[in-house]
Image 1 (tube, rainbow, N blue to C red):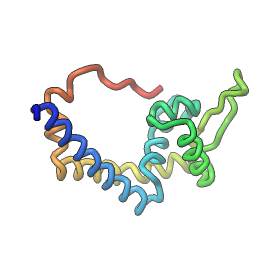
Image 2 (image 1 turned 60 degrees about the vertical axis):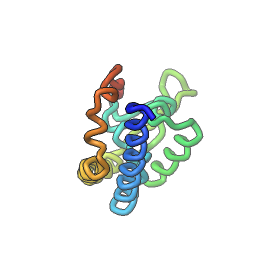
Image 3 (image 1 turned 180 degrees about the vertical axis):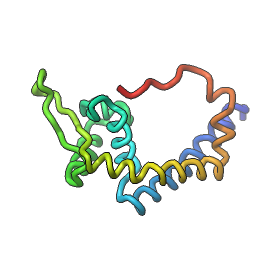
Length: 143
């Protein structure tokens, strides 16, 4: 096995463990799934705290159906609302509500705390700083 392949497998394992710990904390302490939290975070960083549904799907790397179900769940909780695009009535936006922003801001310190602890616990700090991981273009900003 090559060094790169070995590092990649270790990184995948670390990510799975970190994601499990983040998901458990968010669900237990804030009633949010990990994708729900990430959607709220992305919306909070977006201009006007809104995105077209397909843009949100692209940011989350989820298909349209999964994002629609997630947005319905967030709407039922009063965390987001849908709005029609004024220029294109077929375009649907997802908009973060004040309650959604409050929920995100309440969960964020726990997310960061668990993320930092889990990255260290599972050896991901070292893997994230590995030379081959840092190569390549930086991820695009939200907006």
